[in-house]
Image (cartoon, rainbow, N blue to C red; front, side):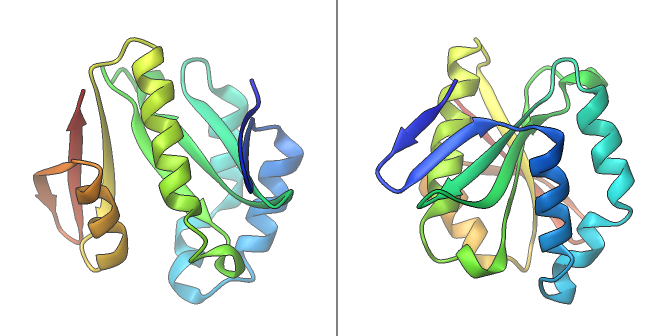
Length: 150
């Protein structure tokens, strides 16, 4: 699979791309560093994935982030969207493109919904998710869970 649209491209992730993203992410602002510690956990999850899937995101042919559809390997009935965009590529609509592709992939795989967790202070992400039709279904400490039913 190689999904391409104008300046964007999404490919199935390989370990080298994941390591490159994690190394670049450690250079980003402190607010993201805790998400990627320890790096070995995410690499292990990626390497052991059976049903979960990971995709690299390219913007103008530059590796700019990744998204995942996870939770299936843990027994959840619908995938959970997760995305990380490298700081220098933000504000390019990459998150919108990734979310749109994640929704398409989930629908095509036969799922009837997609959910996600978001820090309740991440106003821009919440606006994006609501614009796609996601509804808040649960509040957990600093994170809220949103769901989009197809």
